Image (cartoon, rainbow, N blue to C red; front, side, top):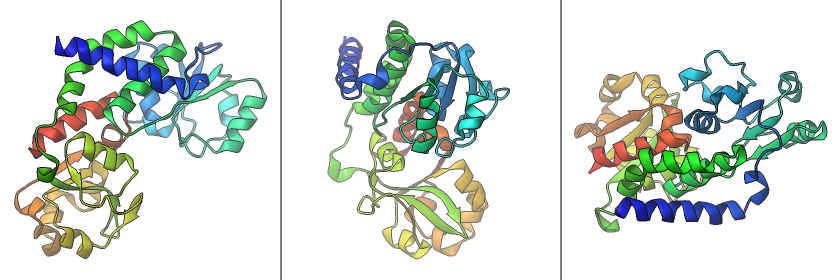
Length: 286
């Protein structure tokens, strides 16, 4: 019964959210040839069994094996009108940060429909995005069935508050290391949203955005858990490289072996895979 109630709550909330950006979520005029700008969008199209409609994706969809043979349109924030229009798309379906704006305007001016899907860094935000993509394709019933069968229990587990806020595990999320300097997730980032979804306290929530941080400040903050992209872990020489650094090795996270690495887009892309990653992390940091 609880799962049935949650399905209704989350999809009712999705309807409300869609109303704030009604045009983006309206059914497409022609979805026969879709260019997806954003890995989470491509992921959701495949989940909806609509991958056959894709004619190209951007580089952030490389984590999806299904896209291996599709043309690439470059990076979601740095698109080229000429490369996209050469593919003769009927619809450009992109994430909130798709751009630049001038390129999108150029594409729209030649009567190719462009839809930019809103993103919020929460479990509800992911479901809203999924529902919006499904509505664009006329697959709302399929989306609800997929959510009910595959994700309702995951979302219920993420929403369950197992601990009081005063006892949340203290965590930091590192996007990458540049010259051994960590790039950490501050407030209003996908990394901050992911930590909150997993039931962790972001110890750098007083910082805005993604910021480089000295290793000394990271050590002084002393996270109990360190969450990294696999790219970040590789750039620092793996767990062995971190343990060989006296500063990093002195943190509670390293001393207690609480280092958690995930694929970058699965961790931060806020597609459906991010729900599973957040639940995995929630279980790991209890």
